[in-house]
Length: 595
Image 1: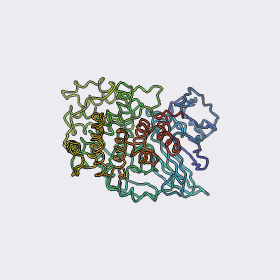
Image 2: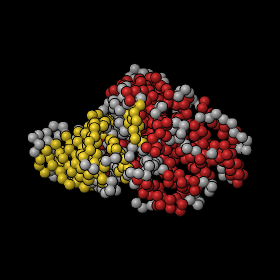
Image 3: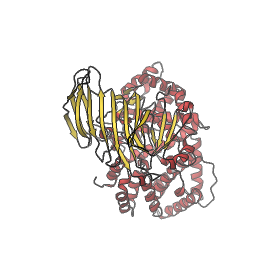
Image 4: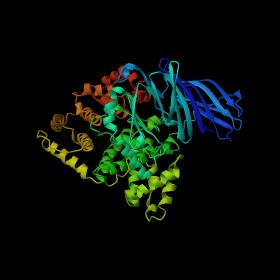
């Protein structure tokens, strides 16, 4: 039904804000029907290509149509035939964001990037847009001279054709449609690491800052992951620092990870996000969830591997891994409470039939999945035993898409002789909504945070002395938020909390920090406390970057503030075109603004 190889010939038009061209699809020789998803695409022609190259018009039949999912198209195939479709995207295609020169760091050239996860590849090309289907691709991308085009594949050359430069790409490893990615802009690049396999791309004005942040650790992350999971199969690890409107922390496109500039903290304190995207090279890209209802097989496994990388990378080892797990569990509790602990979206396996996967996106799949794998780790004998399984998992399922039953069978088979495997209540862990039992963690680093919080509340005016690491400061802020939520009700308590916040502000200067995780937490604390002092700073923060992890909770919290709802809606309406289409859609829903 789905193509096993796609050959693309595309032109990026920065004036009309469209990508146009044609795609040629190769199917298995026994395939008698071709299926495609399409949303907003203009289909100009569709032909069947015989073995001798003869072309014959082909009818695309609309099988279904849906306001979220678009159209499911079908065509009858003769054995051995290929299909060529000429098409162009809509100016408002959800997969694409077009930036004017003024919206870039350099202000000298336009920029375009794609975001196909979860179901937006269908707004870029006609494709069976489900993670259970994988294909290889080749491509040629035509852009104005002076613009560098990149894709989630290996560059194979470029040539100038008049006013255009044509870049060629190949991805010989099968990928699902959500990992198809294109970016084009005024960019610099530099290689580093073993065999120069790491390649950093960024705007010239951002490049040296990004180089200092990322070049020291990225190749080490890959090497550690290889020791755990087996060889890195994608050859190159390219990563692109995008303009600030990018809606995610990172996107794991093979050979071209996208990362947000909000990671540029100046002290490499947020590079663990790169470790997460590196981990996706195995968990998600190599072994993929079959449907979005089983996305925990991507994200939960990825968080687990990310934190195994952290345990091997940091001097504090397992203590750092468990500190990250403490922070993650707090975010899981927040997500479950946001949806409601009986909500379908708080399950590990989610029923997403007829549901936009963007609506279900949260930390649940990440942290609930990690927590389950941590439970399994402790049951089978510790991290080294679990790492042996991860290697087996990747070798067994590489290049495939799987569901939770596949994982269960593989795991139980690998540990068949282990006496405790029968204790696993798979139904409970995979299908029960809400907050799961928290697994025991090494609390050494967390207790240092708690001790500082206790001292701060005992005597908020006293000068602070501490040696907390960045991750500990984040956990400290989470702890302070929890105390405000549970203890701050009366006038006396509020007066005391004011002193606590003033002391924190005096010592840390959070609102001027380059660390966006700290700023985000600081603004959330102040909004939840009801303070008016940082409303303007909050608005500045949510309109200077578009990362949904930050902007969505802050818009929601701002809208709950006694003096914030009009400010939140005004800020969003004024800046809505700055945000990526996915972020714009989700913030609109959060604020109750019709789209």
